[in-house]
Length: 249
Image 1 (cartoon, helix red, strand yellow):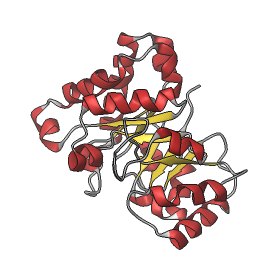
Image 2 (cartoon, helix red, strand yellow):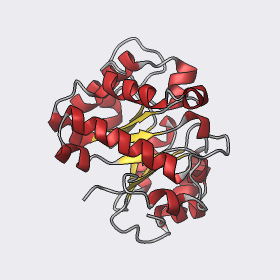
Image 3 (spheres, helix red, strand yellow):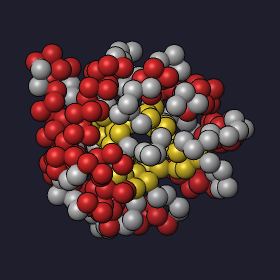
């Protein structure tokens, strides 16, 4: 049975006190069952978040990392630095990193390899722009983003990979892919993995949906066969909303 996952990407939000308050509120929500719950605060609060989630059901992830192990990369963070403070998961390939910071498939392939070399789990993001969807090119765009970065990995590496489909046109816009559109793409993605590797591996990899998931639509989206959870943005900044989404699985 595939792992159900709800991950909250806090992006560039919450200073120190707000970070603590949100984590305390999440910790007070009780049992999340078998769902894997992950939060991704900003770099400067990661160590704080790790200390506040010890012996809880909540994991802490980083929002990004550099493709090199060390060196003269001012302002960047390496996987060894993250591991040293207890971070075992990193989000890579988010649409905002691709759009605003020029990250491409070649760079992301290096980042994925570097993360795996440091025994980190990777939540790998990908998804099409609105123009790709309107032109009917969305399947090819997603196929290219996945195959160019992940399909050189050996089968064993996929135990550390979580896929996150995020239609870029549905992030922060208030628009959401319909549950049927999400299922269609998730099934396509799973089939890609099956064709490249095998059915057993494809059936084991968790595929998250990320695109304006809210308490009001989470249950319907998560009910789809190939949707294994969500990568949540704005709604993850509210303990009540995030908890409702988690419990919607």
